[in-house]
Image (cartoon, rainbow over all chains, first blue to last red; front, top):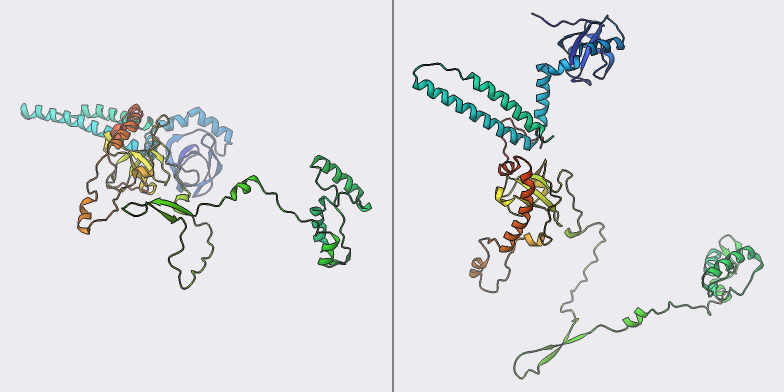
Length: 166
Length: 293
């Protein structure tokens, strides 16, 4: 049922508070509600932090309990947590959300145009396949293939549109 | 009194006291004489000490009239020299003017007063208005411009017949209104004035640094013209007033001149033309306070 556990070395994501959005490693457990936490590579000083504001990630580091910051840093850099984190879907979703919030009016227009173009292409393919299927009788053609290629194109367009003004 | 005379000594003592030398002020004299050497020769060499000995603080020995005699002020009366401008100014302005008069057997001309006597004197004098401070007429008001609005910014018009249209900002006019253009070929917004308050400034900017805006585009150029000469009966007035606005040739040429420059810059940014063609609208889930413009 539970896959991620609070353990020494568990990397956690801070969801609210002054350090919202940063990653930390659990160094020790203080009591039922708090942990000693340290984030040398993410700019969080070693401190006590309530579990409530932490969200556990999939990453676990190897260091003994109450290890000093140097050890935590070594373990962190050895595992390359920062890069691994950036590659996760979780981090990408956060990034996409941030980008969306920062969109200017011009960006919104460009995204709208890209979406429209993409939907047209998809619809076009759909109609083609539907026509083919209706002509040849009942043949359940799956239009998944063109959709996936379109999705990749759209995300590229959206990213281009957002990167261009920046 | 003593203080007054000491101060008074300095000015009138210029010519007379130059010759007197009191033993008390020798170092001061030397300084004064050195100073005077640098200045004009007429100027005072030293100031006489107070001729009014002090009895107690604030009380002098001699009265005003006695001091007048002691300081020999009857000899020292100065007037400011008459400047050349004042000499010229003695010419009085013209009081009357001779105007030609038409008609037969009229004598051809009349002598008309330029400044006439008032035709009405109120029974009670108008009370003097209290002094006010800092109340300036509109033309002298300070004009402000939001920091987000710079030349070349794309603005969204919120009111007027062009509401929702995205438009390029050119410059701020003397009354504080913003000079704005569509450009016309893109969204049918001509060179027009817009009010700062009824406009959303986006962060999209067009590079307008090289665009030259003709200098005759001022507030007077854009002001609405109204005929105000109802010499005839009232029934005719409603016909003569301009109901239909006609676009003058000058407006067209100005529009072309400005737009050609602006369009060149717009074409450099991809998709900007389409962006200016589109209109701004809100839909479900879109909240202006959450949008970043």
